[in-house]
Image 1 (tube, rainbow, N blue to C red):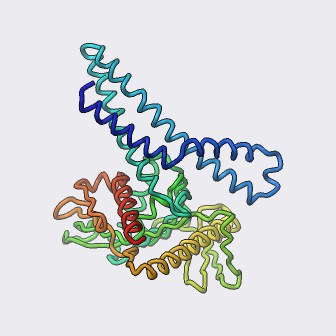
Image 2 (cartoon, rainbow, N blue to C red):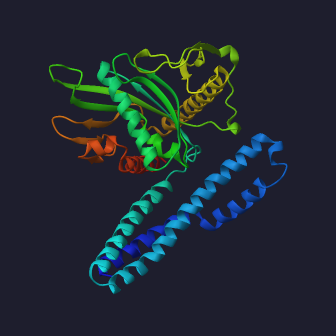
Image 3 (cartoon, rainbow, N blue to C red):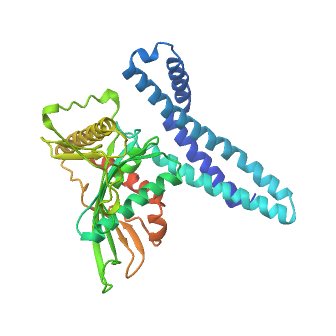
Length: 372
């Protein structure tokens, strides 16, 4: 094993030591044991609210412990892989060395991502994420752009094998979508994806312009934490307007023959949510209510954060343009907050956004630290 490889393995181990200290792996193990014992109690589900809290905390703790212990085991095994590769000769040795190098690259990436996750310490950061995408200025190009953004996040989730539930998609008449709402189910999904909130800008030659002119279009991304039963987000029925309608697909095509889709309007705030993915009107209303609760919870969190920012005399750029995607006259995606940029928009739009997520999380932590 050459000196450069040995030095990197030493640095990776040191970084992982720091991560394990922040996560407090011994306490994490103890938490898993305690929560497992609670989850095994025969009377657990007598109190459904408490049971959901226990099982949710257990699932998150197990996933976190499993990830950090797996990375430590693989990192400890890596020097042995290099030694075995050096002992082999010819093609077998070269292949074994290439495999060891590939594993080192994977560990470098995973440890970097885990290090960023230690920066997610917000109250709702460990939760699943509820994402809403809306087309903004730019006409049919903006609707098409909103659908491209939705695909980007769905591909990102697919790359990480995170389950996704699409609750509602409102299709535009010519192409693309007016809006869409979906949930990403993963540990720390909200904390990770919350840095995506804001306006995303696309510059390209419009495929809908027969003169081939350059078009700038915009789409907005909202991210909220999925509500848990312990949040107690109260909604008075008198504050709701409930509309039912027939689910539709692209081009206004009907996808069922009953008025099963549900739209809820929260009159005091003007927040509107819809759900059409379930078979029954009752199920769609329940899902729409959960989405509305999540949006109200996020609104409450933002209001509290705004008060704290005002006390600290710091501004917030959430909701402004936060990323620019340029497909013409050159190829570039640039985050306007962190200056992180890449020259391969195709890969980004295919879900390769981890670099932007990590730089956004680091940027946010720096701002929080500077303001405290």
